[in-house]
Length: 394
Image 1 (spheres, one colour):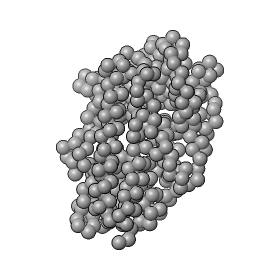
Image 2 (cartoon, helix red, strand yellow; image 1 turned 90 degrees about the vertical axis):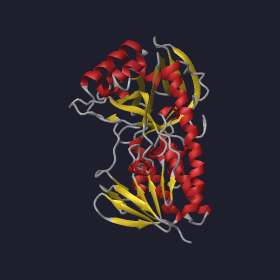
Image 3 (spheres, helix red, strand yellow; image 1 turned 60 degrees about the vertical axis):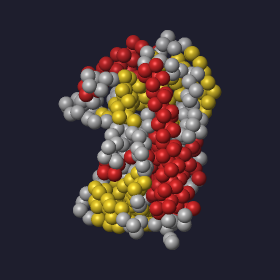
Image 4 (tube, helix red, strand yellow; image 1 turned 90 degrees about the horizontal axis):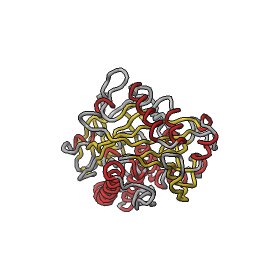
């Protein structure tokens, strides 16, 4: 039957992982990325699960400790700075940009098309016809839509599905480890650090710096602080940037209203343990991401499919966003290999597996979010505390 020709909508981590794996399988692959510039997510740190690092490790021969920072403990702090609990557990962390650069460099530029967006598609028996924003079109045997939380493909195929606001936002930002006092550095540098607040929590962990430097003392400290915000009365204010523009999902670095940023720092100084407060109040440029759930009833549509955040978007509490996108790609290639390139058959099996994974992940992250932001039951004894894609710790 031969391996399919593939068009991929979206050139982020999930799209690139799919592109690389499909090319390795023997497919002819083109990636279409709507951005006109190389993707960049300043200040975005991620916990690196095994699924995210699998391609660099297995196919590029890059040990995870060459591109990730690591910590050996999970530490819960009390408000006065004392330690509530220390749990020995090793995590790997990276900057989103680091993983993206590795995958982009491996795929190359020749078939990575910038500034081109998939505007529509129609799946037929023997091919899928893809229309692009620049007016051209093409046919492919398979269309993989990895176009993120604002997915045009999902909106087209599942118009009834809408992102559902979870009721809270995440404050984000980084500060250099070298800027911290010795006391704060000593408290934080080898831990994923938590503090549980009244209906909320913050976590802080070290990530590589802008150059990829992973040496302790040279890294960045990354914060994620979950804060409840009413959808009608508070969220619009938080999502209005310093120039008066209302955003729908997030406010990137450099645009958060300065009054809001001052409020965040004042709240940090008043409520956080001293080492955590020092990190937050030292950040030059805090940014904001609203937290959403997306739940889909289908992921395959003839010869097209949606994957990553274009399908299920789960709250960050399992640290599985990039892992889920990568796993969607690995399983897709596995099913194509089983069927010798029979796209409809492969997508049918793939969809069944990935829907189950997405439903389970969404339920687990909702439970953690409710425990933290609503019930006040989240803490060091939370049963799914350890990050994982399929289950806690896996």
